[in-house]
Length: 288
Image 1: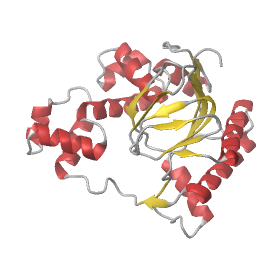
Image 2: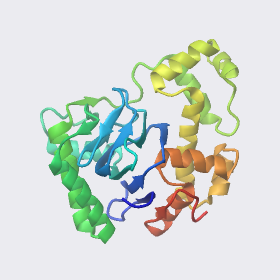
Image 3: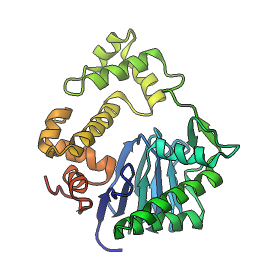
């Protein structure tokens, strides 16, 4: 399948949707979440990924689906690694297609949920590949048409429920307040002891409740927030070294490690994709 390589880009016809075409062998995604959906098709090899339902395996032709906010990881399931194509549509894009469908089992409000993390659907697999090919060729009409066709197919065949919008449901007060404190203190976060004191509880009960509710311990969650903020700053054209300083990472290398373990490409490559449309990354920092 060749060397480990990744192309992370956003096609002008799909201004809200990120795309990733990659082949990984030794790379491991840290446990992380996305604000939007993840839809991928495995072209070769096997990906294994952590998921609330247990470790999943996806082989050639399989479609991988991760709902917004679901904690997951990812690594090679076979020695030769895996190659895949992924689209990352925001919640609003998917919900808009669901509303257009006006299907009885997909509500017009709320967030559609896909219960199965691995699908056997050759038609969807082919559509996902077609979205990528259209984007790579610069065919705006085909890319936008195929994206909506793909999402419609996924929704009508595989979305069996919805999650009501409006924030986390059932999140304990202490966890909600602790999360807000972390968001407000990216550069100088409190210790677990100080965080627990600020929300009126003890350190271990807060740690346990935070992990059970959010899916990650506070320090790991904070790094996810920092990566998301780093994306915003990189989108604005800032260089990775400056972004690292503004988001609370110790240095550019620290940012690069967490950024790549979440998105699959280093921040310099991500920034180049935003500036120039597309970039390749071979496991090292580029275009910093």
